Image (cartoon, rainbow, N blue to C red; front, side, top):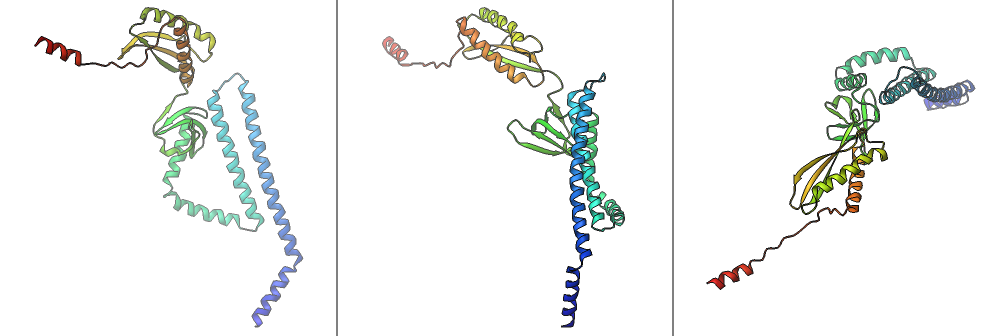
Length: 295
């Protein structure tokens, strides 16, 4: 019973200790202040980076927009990580945890864990070379393995790729072995146009060429005037003409749809029919009757 009484006395003494509560309140306020200041530092740092890039874009030394977006994202992440780390250390000091001993112990543990963190090191090294070699940048349309879409973010450890259907794929940089980048060079739109065998091929070609010459004036995405290559293949009920057009990167799908629409409208204006599906029926009965009549 005595130890219970002593425990109650110590607990009562601790709860009634004004210095203890004042110290806890001051520490709590310091932690809140550290978190608020860390948030402000991150916001101000990101704003400085964006303004610096915006001012630099007006200078004589121009850097591609792709690379600027990538560097902005990377620097923003670095500022966030560094600020959070410093804030965490300051909070530990507020709660009277020996940071030096903790860091020394973390160094020893980190050395041991480092041997088992080879994948993490590989991801960071690969991410560094992706950014350094400008293999792809934020906003590029790429294909990495089975994933295809626009690059949302490139970090030192992971890359985020958003597909056109909305899925966000997060890939470790170490797993990126082969990359197909569709945003560096111009794209080529390929359109096949079917003309019925009964139609006038030469007239159709002349009408299409006239229409293609007008396309660059309507669509600024076209880099070179579209070209009619000629007859591509012979189908079951049609002759297939092929059209190619050089466009800005990743604009070939849009221009291909516009070319199809323009071709259909122009052919209709000149009375040139696009072939429709046909079915041929073969009747044997008349032939069998003729053979019986001969007998």
